[in-house]
Image 1 (cartoon, rainbow, N blue to C red):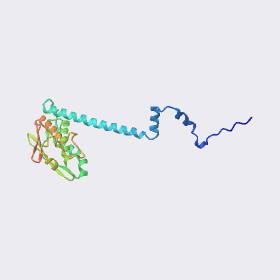
Image 2 (cartoon, rainbow, N blue to C red; image 1 turned 90 degrees about the horizontal axis):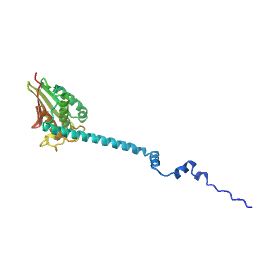
Image 3 (cartoon, rainbow, N blue to C red; image 1 turned 120 degrees about the horizontal axis):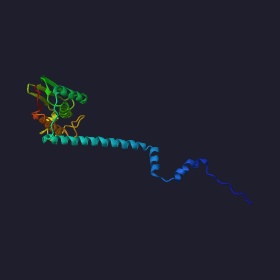
Amino acid sequence: RRGRAPRMEAPRATRRPDWVQPRIRAPFTEETQAMLLVRTGGIFGVFVLFGLAAGVAVDAARLLAGFEELDRLAALETGTLALDSGETDLREAIVATLRRLEGVLRPRGARIGLDVQGGPFILALDRDEMMQLLWRVFATIAGALAPGEVTEVSLVSDAEAITLRIEMPAALGQETDIFAASARAPSGAVSAGMSGGGFAFRLARAEALAAKGSLQREGDSLMLILPALTS
């Protein structure tokens, strides 16, 4: 009887490794896709998704802050919200606010100078409330300063009132109504809020009125007048 022909085997170099066989026969499930994504460098996509999620969270926080400012403005203008009382040294609060802005202004060669006359500068207003008002005003001023531009601020006190006069930057001086929603300071490294400079000034004006004071424009200057705390 004739012998059987020898079995021909594929060269070892062209044979599939044994460990590949079950994976080829296995269905291409979602788990398999995920493993493949990770093994082929798709894990980068996970970090992209995390980055997008973080960006959405930041945008949501900004929107929430914007809605809170709108609610605050509405409550102040309708008289349904009163500012917290306390004692605040306005001079110290202004110095602290300008110090926060130095890191933004110095690289641009811009500056806000402060001249103080008289005293004392004590207000019957909670410090946190005063710091919010000052930030809205000075952050908007700082954001409107051009590189190399310098603006001057004077603080004067008598027995009854404290007056803060701020020389407006050229960009703001060109605005017809600095309290209008359309009055936006040029976008820069600092901002008083997502609603623009006009809204920030309007909210600061409402806060000043609630503190029995005023915030208004006089020529090329912004005037903040608040009652001094009397013993």
